[in-house]
Image (cartoon, rainbow, N blue to C red; front, top):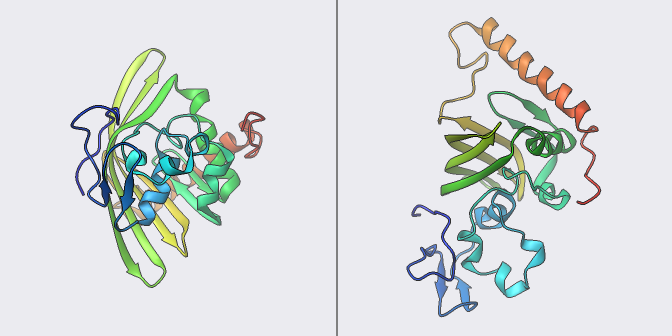
Length: 215
């Protein structure tokens, strides 16, 4: 799978996911649909709910790139992709359960003036019957106090029975630091506790996963 950037789908030369066959605008057929193709509209800045069905099922979802989960505009429906006891973890927070995951992503708009994924590459593999691993190698952009921040990341999604059970975000593509990945397990345990503590504070600040009224 090639690299995806954020071109206008009407522009000539816009890159097309090879999993699709297209003959003119709005006339695309899927050769082999991956689970990642279902998830990406929720991760990326592209509202599948406002488009007609033919567009939703076209390669348009692979062209529109900037964050949905990561773009401070996640909707309640986006979290239907998670299993009820799913987890999300990055170097700062560790969320357990869908309500805490909602709090983690809803809080982005409280911290950043702007956030989006500007480039990504997907790799999907079956690791066991009914289980998949999806790797999203990506570049993220944030604006904090007027300052632009650019970061590379590796998003890892573990899927069971078409639901995400674990979502990890490795900043700078470095493994999360915990008791299993640092030299001193006690130090790793303290790091884990710190992420859980910050998540609990964020969860309380965001109304314990309450969906905004506009969502």
